[in-house]
Image (tube, rainbow, N blue to C red; front, side):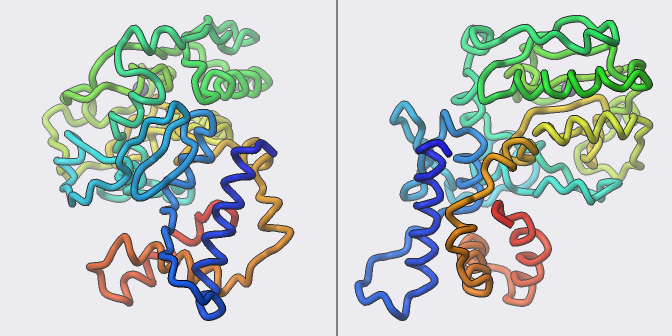
Length: 320
Ligand SMILES: [Zn+2]
C-alpha cells in the first residue's frame, strides 16, 4: 500500500472514529468530514490529489482548489461553469439502462479541475500524450492518449482485452482519440482535448445531436443504441465511462474517469486493509456517512434524504 493511500485510510478511520464515537470523546474538536467526492478524487488521482482540507482539494504541488463553491446551479449553468463537487452530481451506475430523462453521469466536468490534472493549454496536454498501440491483433492503428493518471495504461489494458476477441474487430478498428476542440454546440473543451477520450466506429454509433439535430438540452428524446455491449463491458472494467449511459446518448464515446468508475484492478489494489482489520460497526458507519451526506443537502425532507442516501450514496461508498 502506498504511503499516500495509507494516509488516506488513516485519515478516514480517524475521521470516522472521531465522528461516530462522540459520546466517549471529551474534547470539542470540530469534525471536518471529508465528502465522498473528495475521497474518490484522492483514490482516483493519487499522484495529483493528496488531501482535502476546509473545503479545499490539495494538490501534490501544494496548490489548492475550492471543492464546493456553495452555488446552486441549474443544469444549463453547470454546462457553463462547475465546481469540483458537481463532478459527482450524478453517480455513474452500470445498472441504469437505458438512461432516464436527464441522467448524464460524468458529463458535468469541472474544467478547472481537469485542466489542473491534464493540462490547461494544448501545449500542456500534448506534452503528456503517448502512443498506445491500439488493438494490433485486429489491425488497429496507434492512437494518442495522455499518460497522466494512468489513462494510457488503462487504454492499453482495454486494447489487450479487446484483442483477444476476434468477433469484436468490427467494433474497434476506427478509433479517434486526442483532438483539441470544444464540445459540439458548447464553449467547453471536449474530453478529447485532454487526451482521455476515445470514439469508436462513429459511423455505426448514435449521438443525440445527429439523431435530433434541432433538439435543445432539455428536449424529450428517444434513446438509441446499437453499440456492442461486450466492448462497453470491457471499457467499463478499466475505469472508463461510456456515453451510451447518458440520456444525451453518445454511444461511440468512452472516457477515462476513474473518480466515477474506479478501474477493477485499482479497486482490488485499494481494498482498504485498515478498515478490514478494524472494521467499524456497520451501523455507526452508515450513520457517519449519512451525516456527511445530510450536511451537503440540507434542504430536502428527512424522508427524501434517507431514500436518496440509501439508493444512491451508501451503496457506492468506496469500501462497500
Ligand atoms: Zn467522443
